[in-house]
Image 1 (cartoon, rainbow, N blue to C red):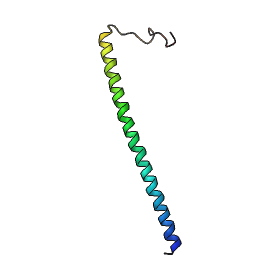
Image 2: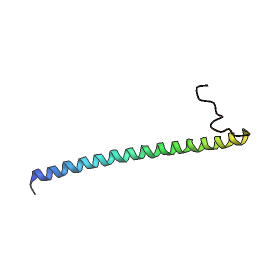
Image 3: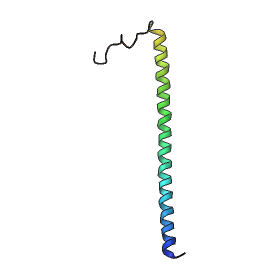
Image 4: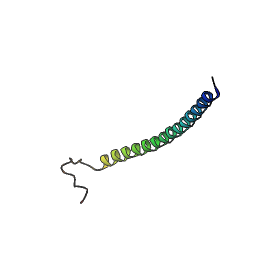
Length: 69
């Protein structure tokens, strides 16, 4: 194996290591965001369940007022 081929292998390895680190960071940040969003979703579901229990009768989608009112 000549020096040029060895240098190419080193460059590719360095590139792959950097790409691996960047992808790992992305996955870590996405996991944090998923946890935050899951917690928010759970809280909203609990609030919806609590408001439904306190609100009395439920309205159908046809009875709901459009958002611009």
